Length: 478
Image (tube, rainbow, N blue to C red; front, side, top):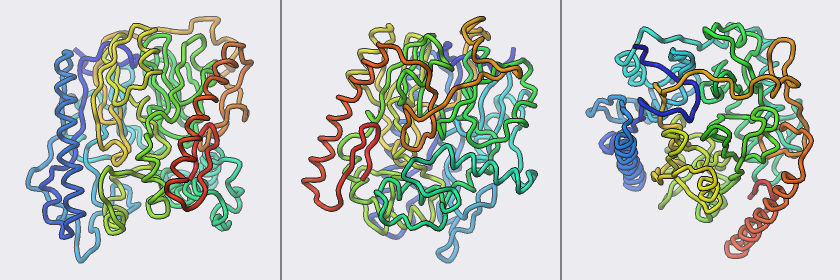
């Protein structure tokens, strides 16, 4: 029996990997009391939440396997004379290696095989080798194999996907004075300057690919599409190229046949998921305390991560200097959509708004709340910390002829129209097709809800003083 199977994210889950973070003891020799206590608290509470998550999964009949970490390992093994002596697998940054917490980032199952797209912690490779080494395919490509022309083309492509109207031009992105830009733009541009070239190490990113039956929905911002379509998947998928600027599971989830939750409006999915019901949950996962902390530490952290509790400049410097691989860019992630479907009728969530609850009820989906307290430090939610190895079900065509006929090009790729009508900060051009009256009314309802968010931001500004907060309806900036 093949031990890998996956054809849709809402098929019945049978086997999954659940990640693991370092133990509190890993940090026990950190000298600074505040830094040590914070990291040990994060470690302890993360494992508490993961053990609870494991219990919920197993009670639903899911087999859960986890990576093994040496209990005697300590952070000082990776430090020498105040410097990190470890270089991550791609020679990019000196950093303490990140824990095997987010297996979703390094691989995905397609057509009975585990396709590995990233380097990651060795414990994850040991785990999948023990589970089933035979049916694995390595798809990681060396960036150095590409010409400078190809690298520059990919870099420009990535810029076009992430930029907003407030960004400097591509030619000036590294030299322009951004000190008078709004703080959110400053944050985004600084992040792009520092990390964009590093992000090009991986030509395929597992979290940027969604398999929904015959359709393969692919984030096309940062890989060589010609080379991608040369891959032999063992079947002929119908490719859908999208530009959302990052990991798909931080933006949307198909949770049942015909049903999606997303940070984008329904019009985004007219081309890729025609006829499916979409619930927009944009910005619902960032409560007032998080916004306050982003505002307080905007100059030092820049929205990359958040910790609930006392922090100071020393803690921030420690994370930046030694733990850069531990964190991501959480300001752009909404964890209310980073959820885990047990099947088409049951879903695990880390947050549950009234809007989401009513949407689940409408589609007869039963939500279960599974806390994951430090998701804004790890920049990973319930979906990120798992990797589906086996879901029951076979390949289906959820949009048989002629549902997507008008969108399919001669090469079999689904062509999506694009424009700026529904542009979201940092996510580039969005799909736009003719909008129905229902969609128009839906957007106006959403605008009223976002107006309430703007009032809340103004209240925070009044209480805290400092620079003006600007709420832009579809996103907030500080």
